[in-house]
Image 1 (tube, protein in one colour):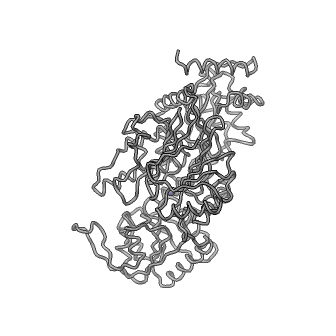
Image 2 (spheres, helix red, strand yellow):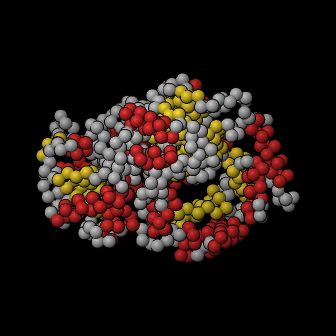
Image 3 (tube, helix red, strand yellow):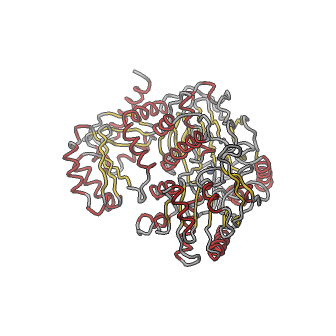
Length: 640
Ligand SMILES: [Zn+2]
């Protein structure tokens, strides 16, 4: 008998002792971070006061109660009964039975109608068929990513269960060490923006946090071969934790599976889906540019299969001595500040990932309230002493003025934007300005991945700001579905028709004009002085966006030397509107630390140019009298 089996036997005995005698416990099993209890009396256990709560407290585990096979009504009969129980206006799209877990996934347009008052309808369903109902919302906008990921995970159900059981046993292995140190090693994104990656290690376990690429610097990847990282073998890692989906944090996660890693990735569900979308696009761009991608789409699927989605605020065991809690970071959909609790109260460290401190139209501001925290690893993108941005309300006014002026010239307005985050924020700004009559109502064309990224947002409204969630869920006035938004899906021909037509706004990728449909738009609109180009996001050094922003009026499209190279003389107006960044500015970073509860003892300033991390580090030291560092890559800190 393995030690995991012995542990499970012991836990089963404990569960039996803690539950009333009339309840039969068939078995208990670890599945990922959860303890699953199989019983023919699943419904009684779930409904009778306090049983699950008491078990969770005594065992200090997340508990999931599932029915045993004999408690389940056969599929076809269950399907009929469930359909009869749920009110018609719930808009049920699909019922999917998972025989292994006894769950039935009910996909519906209105989950609230499936759940019923205080869960009454769900109770009725589980009482009638024995299956445990799980409600999934039909995205208000069709998203191929969301449905592909859901279908893929459904297909891989058997594999996934094996993975979860293996991970569960790993997490619950007995501890073998009495030492109590905690070390943090930087593998990237120190004194630079890009290739975020860290290793957190204790005598028991090792966790990799983020694994990104460096935009514009092919081949500069995290130092995964460092002795602290993969040198001890890919499966010496207990877990990979991903703060958010942007490629400078997520691009190289699939490569871990190429190297042989087969452990879990912890992140939020929307980050999982966005990560899949962006990684596949990353491969696509690489092959279009004639580069050999560092991994294949099979490894992206493997990463998805190994992802264990977490909700904000849930404390989760990810190693024998490490608990992870994710909190909203306010940066993009699903982005998280990751808090690690190590040992029984031994040490606490939080990784900010990328943060936005204030509320935006799309998301609440970053959470900075924790039970305890000794070390904070803080992003510093806008940490420089002059990195102050205008308030968003001022920026919005400037943007409205720019649009009104451009509209008077009867030209087209071209806005390059990142598909995830900035585009949705702008859609909300434009929708409101048009609704209130602050700018004329005109078509807003969405080109590139923007529509798909927006659809993923509407599939996860619970991650969006309160008032926006209400609008998407309950009031049938989803701003993203406003009729002026139109997808460009007819390629070059449609683009030409649009430019011949009435004035319009075009929101398109890529955000830094480094490729994608924005190039076609420049070709079509660039030489007409009646048109306007508006920059709303950060333009990195070396990008075409930065050159245009600086006033360059002769640009080359396509491969600079090849036969497809094309010179365009830019005569369109070029404007820049600051203040729409997804990152906290210098003020926001200081406020995040100032109002943080509790104040950390130590801060590592990372993810910023050398001058930014340096200036932020010394400012925080002077203002708040705490130990601060601005580490280089490959430094190791002993935290405790
Ligand atoms: Zn980011």
